[in-house]
Length: 467
Image (cartoon, rainbow, N blue to C red; front, side, top):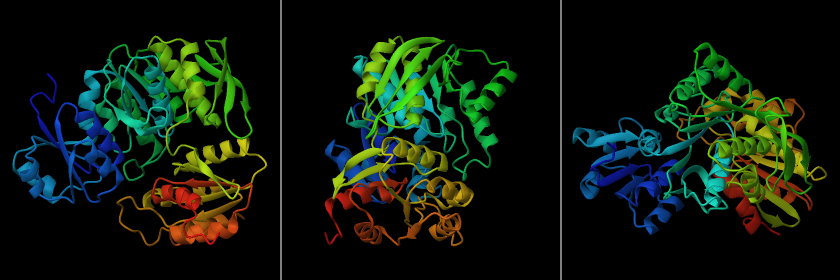
């Protein structure tokens, strides 16, 4: 029996967050959904336009107003929150976001995309391929799929494509009919103390696949190789589809060509047999690997290489994944979500390949004090690939301020390594600095998971500019 059977009214705490707003979109066609959040932002306004009642702040009064039978809360809602405690005292059922999403996913033919990096783009690719094949999948992705216009949609078909989040271990609730693991890296240092702990979590996730479910993995990744070794030691059985460079794996890519100005192509082979060229509008070798994962998953679901490759050829990407925002004063503005050193390195490498003769100016906002402290040296090393870097203050994302961890510390490390950088106290100061710094022909790349996402648009609008 469905775990949502008999539940009419559902209240979402933290509804303005990306994951929670997406969940609201999936639940609202079949349930009366309400929500609340500390801020009444754009996401909340969009949900209200869909008929979802939302309140500002967290208060036990919401329980009287909306009378929910189930309260779902995001990881941003701390234990001890008045509203959450009141719900439990009243005997109202509560669940974390990941757990509630898994109830929907596990009832469907779930295609789960996990991994430390690349899961948003890979799940977007798979979702678009299935959508273009008229299979009407349900989608739950970490960013808006530009070709579809949303990050979450309830489909009419049996397939459910979901990006699965390992940050708090909630991906272990999910039992896919097909799973993709793009890579396994140490991140979310507030939850995992080492990469070995991350591998252990992915081992438990892999053990939870439905019987006979294929597991699609990037064989080039060291963490994935550790996972495969552990699965072998455990005597796990199941279909493993590996992808990577060359002909050594079930799916491979070679003869990589970067198109000046944007785009990448390669020849794809399957079990050593050349299938043809894959031409993509998105850039970066990391996106070739993401595409191989999508091709392997699509074939496992019964789709041809030609159909999947044709869709990938027009794929424009997910928002904030090397997303071109526009041009001002001859400066090309691109926005990217990268905030982990490996992601930053991949994004900068992609920009160097497609814009080899242009100066690369980066505005970076460190994300979380815990991550900045753990990866200070790798962050400094990754950012050195830029010609000039502006640093915004650390975006805490709910973490308490740690005075000893700051963008100043990152700047000191970068300067010691000879990388030119400038500290900016806020967006206004960064815009003023850019106004005098950038020149015609430059590429301006904004990087980070926080409020830096607004800066590219502000620059294009000429806000705080004298020119």
